[in-house]
Length: 421
Ligand code: SAJ
Image 1 (tube, rainbow, N blue to C red):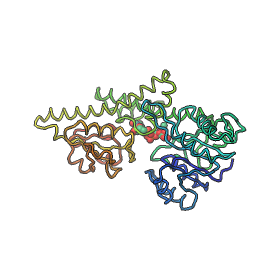
Image 2 (image 1 turned 180 degrees about the vertical axis):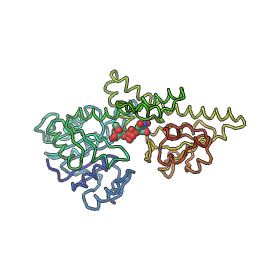
Image 3 (image 1 turned 90 degrees about the horizontal axis):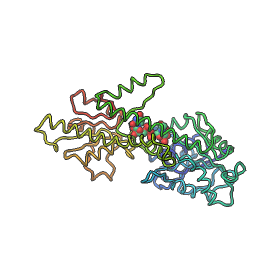
Image 4 (image 1 turned 135 degrees about the vertical axis):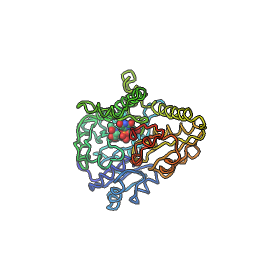
């Protein structure tokens, strides 16, 4: 299948880089988003999210006329849906963004079009997408009913890029591509081969859906193992990071790193898409979720124990005179993303429970988000925090925090990432 143009629905952390990657290969791309500000920003050749090298790619694509953003879909050869798939309060997946994206493109579909779901989705969602489109376009045929002879091809190709390395991984990672029929798979593959240098591996839609969920669930289970080890090692006074380093010297062992908990919108979310469809078959994944979700509370307790220790050692110290500094608020190293961050959760819990000052240090942002202005957490610079803190809590292994080590200066530290060990 040949493509002259494509439309990407959802211009966030995945959609915008994908749109730019296609546009770089001289495919004329129309990006669609419900956020007018994002649309206006992109049309100026600028970006509304933080991701290395994305600014240059978007600016070049817009300047050369290959990328444009709009609130309204238009006909195109291919449509890529890259919208969020969060979960609801009961951990059931929320597919409403996919449904409304489907609804927004249904009216402009034409025979021969390809529709690709990129969003991480529970097994069966690609077929649901095909059904939703069919309901809105009874004049067209879709692969879940018409099979290989359908007017429209529908496939799943989950994104797998790591925030912070998106532009590189988008091009170099292998892609798993699963259509509702083999013809759908091949059509999607010919689109990705335009910009992907990794291998484009063919499968069916269900396997592709499960593959993406499996990758993130595997990472969650592995991190949970590391987090469980960190609790055991804390009690037995063993350096867990050294322990893991030594164990990983075994040629068939590769344990990940413990931390303050698992954050972001993927690893802590996607296992639920498997669990919610197979509750009785997923005790391991459920245990991993529980272990990783409980880690922030364990860290809060650990900090409180350190404060007790200071007061015990220096009875003249009042609790309200003790300053806690939380180094890092983002959900992982060297990014500015505070959403679903265990570090932020810990800092806010400490701020709410401690009678003294609690400082939040995050070199990747200018100020705390407005909604936190009334919290007890005080935004502070690294330098100022280093001068005033009594308890140093390392929550994110940002490069800025590797340049000093309060442990060597005899300070009280709670290091959840092992960089000051
Ligand atoms: N974390 C640890 N210990 C580790 C690794 C990570 O505690 O050893 C924590 C991080 O600090 C963070 C969380 O896990 O809080 C998630 O970070 P991450 O770097 O593991 O993953 P994400 O969410 O940035 O991106 C993941 C990636 N998936 C895998 O590596 C299997 C990425 O490739 C996916 O594209 C992305 O999810 C996604 O969108 O699904």
